[in-house]
Image (tube, rainbow, N blue to C red; front, side, top):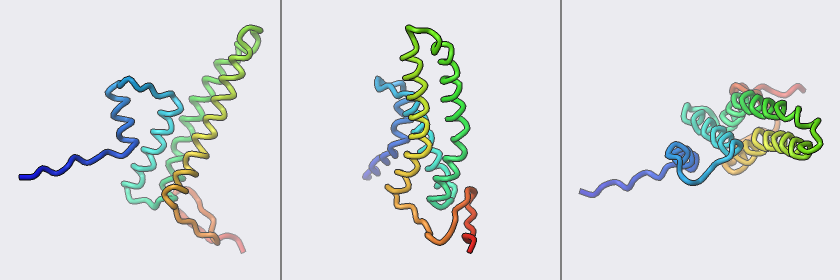
Length: 137
């Protein structure tokens, strides 16, 4: 009997598997956040949501954890702003966290929607939660 070829896992599944196995490849915190965001989109698609609705809902559900993680680290850098030796490092870390958070929460979902060709109706407004309502006339 022929065996079926093993199903090749999706890229996010492979990365999560690598993280669990603790392979030599090290992922940064921002890479892990992006992986979780894409995995959340895939999970919502598996629940039967439309593509655009899944992207918006997963972004909304991940916004608070991403913002809290970035803001607590940025707030932790504030004492270093008053030290002449560490001020440049603190500014770099705070700025990098803020830029990376914006990229994660805005650019990644937009590119996901572009790459997978999420349909958008031009004459309607989109609201999270899967509701689509007519635009005011």
